[in-house]
Length: 460
Ligand SMILES: O=C(O)CCC(=O)C(=O)O
Ligand SMILES: [Fe+2]
Image (cartoon, helix red, strand yellow):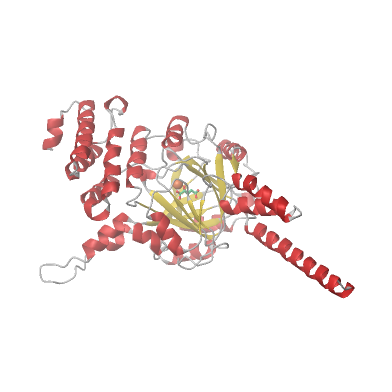
């Protein structure tokens, strides 16, 4: 080979090598999570100190998620250091063994994928990372904290509920704050204030929920079915409850706000998207009934004992997270943050929703940060009443199988009468004789726990 040709070949080889290094570098950039500080001034307030201690303790048990993509980056980096094809080929099987099984989080790349995943049960949170995704998930405009406060003031909001953990008595921690004081709070430099968390601010501004979630939301489907019914004159109903089901909430959090471990109420799934700022979201590496019972037993400030510890993700503007029912989580806002989200039920997860509901009934004080209310039972009953239109036979069987979870020995004395009515409906709706029997057995147990007979329940 001429020296000219050898030079050219060497040059091309170097070019290709540089290209490979650049590709690996680009892959790694994808997975750089943001930095944040967990050391904040507690202003000598014992309950701020409690939150700081909790944050430090969950951080000790938490790590960033292992995903197929992050594992692949590691594998490619390792393999690229080997020389020669045969070395690479022999290293591949071992490298593939290091792929996480299953991954800690389900990465969603585009709207079609979200649609597909929501039609099945999933055991880890779904994460649409705006900066990684190839196709945009449609939500409304972003909004800064300042713009949001202006909007609230202009729309006539006079006061807001705030969760203030500097108040000693936990039951007094939710208090009202005037809108002027809220505005003044967010204008104060963050190092001169303790963190306040304004949760559950009703969204009347317009829907932010991604379309795919709306399409899988059972209560939205029921409302649409009702809305398309015509009245006896053949006119489409104008007073339908269609918009009422899109219950979205804003979360406005001061820098360093912490929410300790809880499960969202009434067995619902939760979606959340960030409009401004950031949140660090923690959830157990294994999400199973055992882990949620641990929360019931150990309480909201104890992150130890969870199999595999905790996973954390950083949520940034445009990102969307969806949690399955019964998913314990804790949240830290490392800066002033505005987020919007909502709760919903899906056909694929309705069985797990009932399981989570049961856990909340068992541990009403420690499991969730909200109480189950009559509306929740009304919603659940509505779903049961439409079960044949909304769920496949297998999904209905899964729902009925959850009835056997309840048994007289473990039922708390004060289980709500609404639950009894709800489960009685469940039994009436089920046509499959085996499912019916399972429900009835369960209802008998429930009845005996209340000193009523199954006959009473059948008649009620
Ligand atoms: O942002 C927070 O502090 C808590 C939010 C939360 O737990 C939720 O939206 O379910
Ligand atoms: Fe929550």
